[in-house]
Length: 429
Ligand code: ATP
Ligand code: MG
Image (tube, rainbow, N blue to C red; front, top):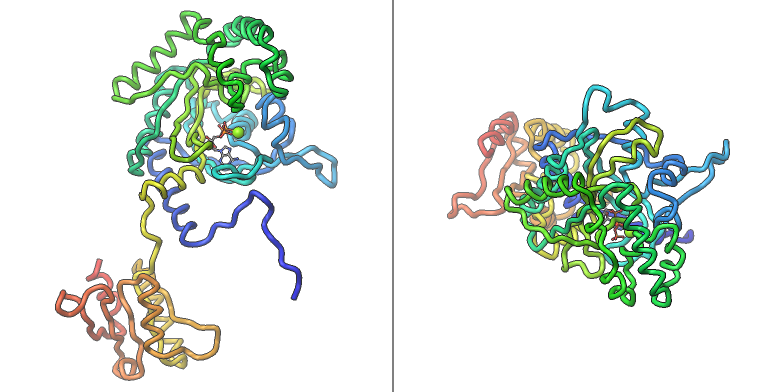
């Protein structure tokens, strides 16, 4: 036998029943996004490496060490598997002038790639669902997308997801805070880890985001950006909070919430749970008014969030909120393969009426006994067994058996004419 091959480390195969859950979840997410008049957008998985360097910032975890980058074999162009979705959406919006006619509300879903250490809730290929509201500057839309996420948790029946918010203000405000931060951190330079030492002058704000437990006391005592915000930034933040308050959304102010990417300003937020171990952030986002210009577009305010599908699915599982796996409606029992033509036709008629029909089929070694076929019908989760037996077919009939309730319970079995299967199905639904 040939050598067996495995998937790349940190990248997962998704098979039934998990794949049923994925489809189901994507539908729920789309429904909620569409309720807010967001529309789907699809951008390439591969982008020019320059997009992420410019968009995310050079001194970020992603650009410094997590990107899957490679050279195009033919022209040497530097390419990268997208580590997140926002930069690509904004690149496309600038390229095609998507906001020319006015602002746009968009959502996307798909795989993202980051070269991280694989662990629970952290993979090298993972999946995000995200929303981007392009061309909107007011706090009303910041609040709108936060409310959308809250509606999602509600629709999915999830509990215990805490909302943390902060404001990053504007560039000038951050510059002033930055100096204070550098002064503070320099005074405690013996407590800085290697990452922080390196970032002290390049990107000190990101030090606040450290996951190093030894540095928590230090960063907790650092100057707060909130104290450097001017009246306009504060008014934006107040407007954001007012709408959340009016909708009964509770949140905590986390002055250390700075987000991983350089492009954020004003409102930033994360939805966090304590149920997923160290990887507790389910959904995160904020405003990124500067990103359009960074990738060569006109100044365009924008705000968005992205959620991690794997983490959300794990949370759904731990709270028992996943639906039963998909099952067919009918299982076609076929004692004799010589009738396969008629059976295939009858199954198609039912499918055309919307029924999900699973045909009994084997590896080619005979149909198996009626008993084993019934066992498979039961295991499939189907409500109905359709029995295409010799005698039934001779009478142009099929026996329909309710696998979930007996005769006494109003179920049982009955003969249905082959030509009457569509009517029979319609009477069931
Ligand atoms: P973290 O702090 O957990 O590394 P992040 O700040 O890097 O997250 P974002 O870039 O904001 O995450 O991505 C949004 C969401 O995507 C995260 O909140 C998380 O749910 C999910 N996510 C990010 N990285 C991964 C990963 N490597 N594997 C699985 N999910 C991820
Ligand atoms: Mg990360």
